[in-house]
Length: 234
Image 1 (spheres, one colour):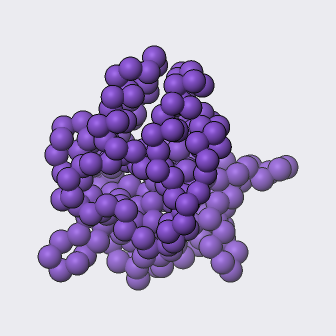
Image 2: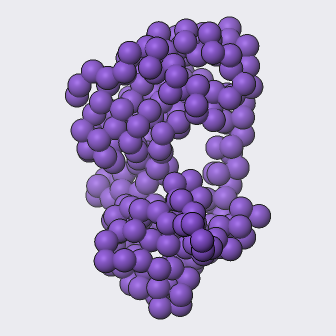
Image 3: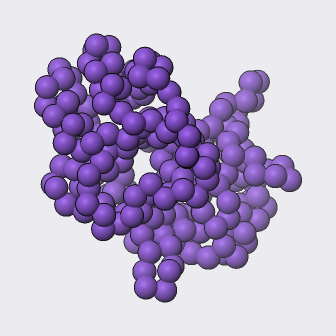
């Protein structure tokens, strides 16, 4: 773990995140002054499921996965979070435990706040409560969508749905054509997200390529038709 980001630099970064939309710059600067901001290596555990919810975290750079595990150490990814995502809110709000284990997927910069200080800031900063309500509403919608997809969709459709989510959040439209390019997670990460095995994901990716619903090179760069993303957003 290494120190990173002066408060002024962190404030500028936070101001560009959707979560803080509608909050004035002086209030974001005040929040940045409350943060402990560090760079963490890949596979660093930031919080364990069941820990007291003492902190709220913001992903500044990199990616973090929130996982649940059972007694056989089988893992399922509940959320995969990129820059601008906030986690630790649920436990902070009700004073309970961390609902999942948070682990860096790659080298990441994370801003950590005392839960009490973050909530006090939310109560006092104009616009901050609106951002919190917006975020909680988004999570409820995402939860309903995920429950529906796991209950009603086949593994193939769950995988395609997940790839469209990733492409919509992280992809870039290629100039001059109607494709969106993005870097896929590993087969194991995808398997953990859709509740299946790595071998099944490998087979399903091949099926999607054969059906021309997906293009890929020899690495982890994938391409989806722009039309697929438009239908997904609707």
